[in-house]
Image (cartoon, one colour):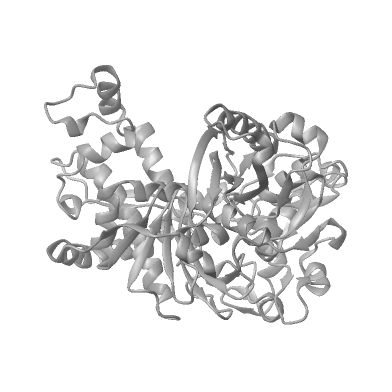
Length: 534
């Protein structure tokens, strides 16, 4: 018997809504996408209007039913996969008191300094607070972009708005409230506040840690599991969404939790790389680990039996978006006007990104000596620096745009290699890496990553949908269709496999130390030029 479910994948700049059929495998029936803006302010702020997420969710839900004869009464559950560590402060009616502060927001430098960077220090952090945080949560709010500092920023800078706060939610949890009027937060989102006690028998927000970080515990919602049925769609939400009242709503999880699930990287030692707007490297481990040196930590996921050892890159695909908007304008205009660039049918593409990939496919490895750093909005791992920025290094008179665009792809891959290298100082990663996200749609990107890492790279079917697939698996476990999250691995086969080219890998191995040196050699300059913006 088939089961039909809807998954909402809420990313940084857009939502993808997917209708899946679950039987002996998970099949996409229909999907729809919608975009929304992110406001980058001049003081390191990055904000979004939560109502834009809901409006996009409603539009795309209507669109999928225009594409399929599946009736609305056949939908047996909805769930979510969403960007994490945003701060969504709402009043008693679930109405946001201000724009959400994105995971990219870095304006709370003063709050972080006052909160954890004074007194006797280790690794730049207050010794006592560091020790207590590590003992209670297994992690620490060591980044200016961590949500507790944003919370305190609002408290210090917008006291009138802060006085209206009833609950602190993340992106997914806000949308859960919109659908079923329940203030809840899944365990992975609760951990992402870095106020969550991970010790055995003490799971929940920790009172001591909240007091130490200046957080009112009354602002924190109830905690649930990702697979929990938390409510049903209300009459008013059903009217806006176009679904039936009473449709089950499952808690879902954050993208860092569920993208790996959708990738099939669910067993101990499985490593996956995500290349979407942001990027990361993640490996499944059975116990909590932390490397302050490389800003890599074990995070709570959707599976209660494991953790994700996780290293984040703020801007991955966002770098390609920047290239599209600011560097490839002439080529894009030509493509849109003519769509007859050459006799080769390969050059006729539906996607502008595909066309860019076609234009750079013959650039040699190493982009003729040009290196790009992908730190367009600061960086977290393996170094924490909100002042870091992107650069093109070693441009000459003969350098063209094709080399520069190619170097952007390589720069993202270099940084992911750096994260993987740092991770392997603590654990063993898998010999073959699962690559997912929009970046995995490009064979050129997959091959470059394989060459840079000098490893096999595996890609699943529809890698851009894995977050939604992960949310569908959450529903499947919640409905009892499969036993647990780890058993979902059998539902997600490999579609493509890429092997490293030996000569290309040698080039990248030679250039990689140069890439790493660019931050060390320019850190002081980054601070001088950008510290006033943080």
